[in-house]
Image (cartoon, rainbow, N blue to C red; front, side, top):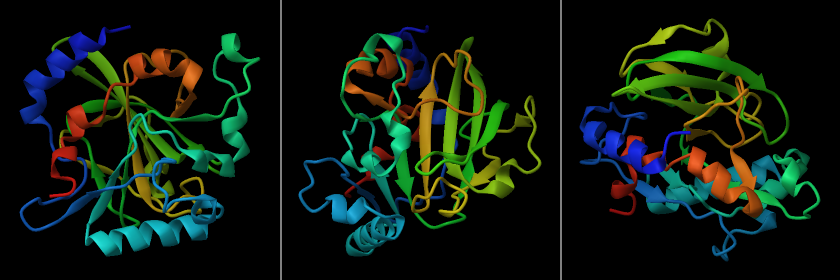
Length: 242
């Protein structure tokens, strides 16, 4: 696996070349942080128990902040994954006997309008794609493979629209700045309010069209070493709350 410090150094050197992933103009549009952790006393089971309740909460937060997008979630502990049995499964055999929730988020979420276009920050190739059609899952998913200064890595884009995977193929080249995906609606994105889950993956292993986006605390070192902060490429967090 690529050491995180090597990844960070190469990405930092080339960060100025990345195309925006979502359409956002910091001069006349607003971005706001969204806290979905237990630390947010205004976010409880009544707000995430159903997709409609979660949608109402997200929409109210966007309206209250006047933000085009809400953003956050990397390394965040989230109780809302209790809404789906999908997150009861263990990811590693060595922790199979530990009774603990899988609730640590490995990517960044950008919450916005359904059908928001998603562009690739740099040229790459379609590694794989899938319709992960379980309640609480990614729904339509695309994974792109990239190379920068001989550094090979992957970016997973989850909760997309089904139309995005209708005509795509593995090995297809996607050019820098090309719109290749859109925020999907609940029926196609795993039953979530419209948003993008973006996650960097250094080593895909045997996964295709899927990769864990949430892990247990006992798995954290392993999974965060393989999934660095997506904002190193997104470059959006600096605008949140301005």
